[in-house]
Length: 151
Image (cartoon, rainbow, N blue to C red; front, top):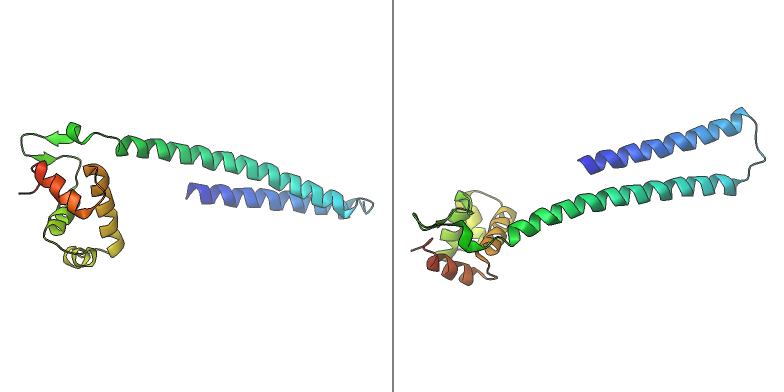
């Protein structure tokens, strides 16, 4: 939403500048300026605004990557709750998805049983893979059994 607001403000600013240029042209009857000058000024303004906007978006994207990297590389051993044999990093819903995966349910069956969308199930499965440091459903179930999450 922040990015959309920046883009709207950027568009309004460019529109205002172009309007002022047109007003000055007609107000002073300066018709000697060629179309190329107006086009060049407009292109320059858009280029500078685009560069600024690009740096802002890149800075925001870097911040998101840093947060993601921290989550991805959290060692699984550091989040084991030895008292209960659970991984404290797993949400209640992820635990439910994991149990249904272990029961052999497909993503669609899991979505139907938990009353969520298929995309939501895929997101939970992806998060499970990251947290359990695996690449396949069968590996996730085996890893969960090794850690004492599933019996």
